[in-house]
Length: 141
Image (cartoon, rainbow, N blue to C red; front, side, top):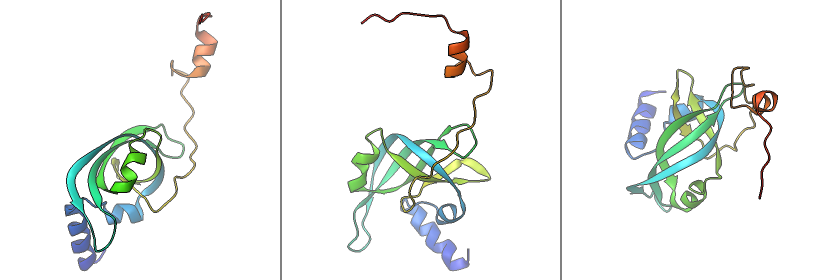
C-alpha cells in the first residue's frame, strides 16, 4: 500500500471500517455468525446506506483446518443487521495469515465452500467415536 492508501485505510478503520489490506490479501474462509452486538456509532457516506459499528462473533472455517472462533469489529449496513443476528447467517471472511484471530467479514464475496479437517481419532465428541464406543440407549417420547 502507498502512503495515501495507508491514510485512507487508517481513516476508514477509525470509523469502524474493515481493514482494506486484510480484505485484499487475507485468506478467504467461511464464517458462521454466532453473535452480533451493534454499537452506537453510525456512519453514512453520501447518499449510501447507514452503517453501524458492530462486534461480530464468528465460527471460522478455513479449508482443511479445524474450525475456531474469532471476533470482527467493523461497520455493517443497518438493513443487514437483522439477517446477521438471526443465528443462521453465513458470510465470507478474510483471515490474516500471520494472525488467524484477526478477521474481517467480506460482504462483497459469496461464502466459499470449504473442506473441514477430519476429526482426530482421540476426538470423543465425533459421531464416529460415539457410534463405535457409546452405549446403546432408547429414547422415549
